[in-house]
Length: 257
Image 1 (cartoon, rainbow, N blue to C red):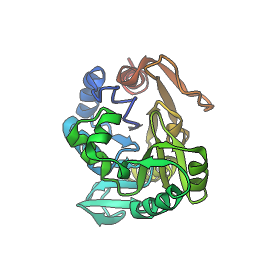
Image 2: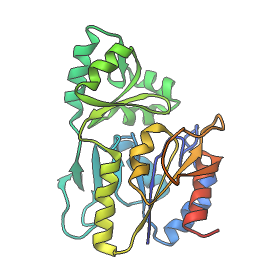
Image 3: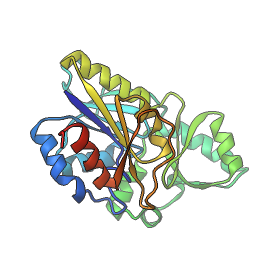
C-alpha cells in the first residue's frame, strides 16, 4: 500500500492555486483509494476547501506540522482529542501565544504578520481571493509573516520555530514538526494496514522534515525552473514544475508508468 504526503503551494497547486496538470493522476489515485495526505503551512479551514474541491477525505497535517487532523473513526479507535468533528493530535502551540510574542517583538523591531493585515491586504500579497484570504487569516497554531527584520526573527527563534518558506516566513511552536506529524500518521497506517510505502512530494526548504520522514522523497521544480537545494539522500528531482512534477512523481513511483 502507498501513502502520499504532499505539500500544496508550489507542489500540488501551481502559482495560480490550480492543479489541472495533476488532475488525471489524482483521479486515478482516488479510484485506487491511495491516501493523499496534505502536509502544508495552510490552515485547517484552507485545507478543508481544497479537500472538498478535490474530493479527498483522508487525514491532513496543518500549519507546518502543528496538528494532525483525522476524520472521526478513520483509524477505528479514537487517536486524539475531538475538535470540529475531527480527531486531532496537537504538536504545536495555539496562535494566541505566538501573536502575543510577535506583539512584544514588534515594539522593538519591524515585523508584519497576517494578523496585522486586512483580508484585502492578505489577498493582495498572496494572490488569493477575498474568501481564500479570510481562511488564510484563520490561523490556529501558527502565524505567517510577510516581512520582518533579521533581529525580529532572531527574537522569535528563541521561543518558536521560524521557517523561511517559498514566499513567506512561518512561525510555529517548537513541538510542531512536519516530520513528526508524518511519522505519527505513517505508524497509524502501518498499524492498520501492515506494509505501507510512504512518498513525500515538496518544493521548498520547509518541506525537508516531511521529506526526511518518508520512504521515497521527491521535489518538483519551482517556477524559476530550479529545485530547492535539499541535501537528502536518494531524493528524486522531478522535471516538471509544480503539479506537472507532482504527477510525474506519482506516475513513476505509484502507478508504475
